[in-house]
Image (tube, rainbow, N blue to C red):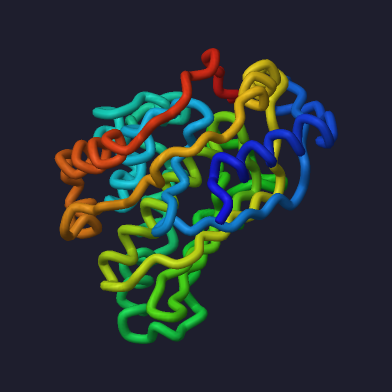
Length: 277
């Protein structure tokens, strides 16, 4: 089994050395990019927590709990990170919040219905969760502060294991990708616990995988590092983690963070990278 460090490093190398240089009108920055990047992960055997550079664990742990809560209000997530403030409306909400779209935006609770559906019909192939609203996102619609980058995921059960396929339309590979992968792997783990099943494969497909020009230096620094042996990170969820996330328990964020921190052995942080807005 190939570690996430190796998979991720190979992707960064492919983009930096073989990607197409493209100017992005929205951000005013150039990127190097490749289309159609896909990789397979097995979170139960080796949780995909990047160690080639240090990433803030509390960030993705708190985001997953916030998303499961299903709110577009930023109050909960602001206790742990302010990164979403740039996308906030004047009332402190974010209209395109992933969790809100999972649970409320389309007139049904996609997330809870997914869990119930797979309990009743584990052989189903209809476990699809959508974040992208074709009525108002992308194409010629008015520009928004934020539109979903991970725009859909499917969940199915095979051999008593829960599998996820995450589909990302656009991914900032230096900043966003390690957090997206860890966050959705944690979500998959929590769904498996809630369903009383094992964790199978997580497939990640990225339509447009890119590195911004203001991150090229950090990308080359990362490529100077080689994956090293370390104990595989294992997910040891507190009991009823999914139900506690539904209730928005801040204590759950701290427990998840500590669980990962106790096992995390990252290399040093890279030079600070600025998000492209």
